[in-house]
Image: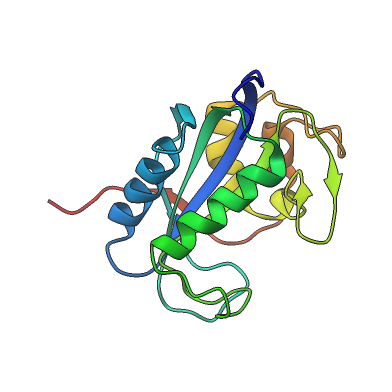
Length: 171
């Protein structure tokens, strides 16, 4: 990382877990990212939903973090993949397999990237209520730089049938 770079704001990450102590995995992922010089500016509530695109029976917890970092998008992706590995994610487990942690870049300011290893904005955000609900909570008016719709507009037209509910841990 180049310490002479200025911090970039308006970066939104989606964290998710559907194995083990899901809340602890979200928390530990946040701590590991912060330990690498990333600032978490705001966090959405934690939401719970059935798995999207999977036959798993394990519900997901998801949370969006708004961050600020000096890392570029590719360096941030590398950091997120490193944190996933540190927390025990199997990189060969398949696209929609159960996972102890999943970290995705939803938006990186107004950057648009279409590459083989990185796509920003996240290519399926408009199809996933579990990403749109926490995004609409944090930044309802944020305009998707490709679809030219706000997070709230995307949520209103999203056809994802899965129920997304606020998570409340049992006492």
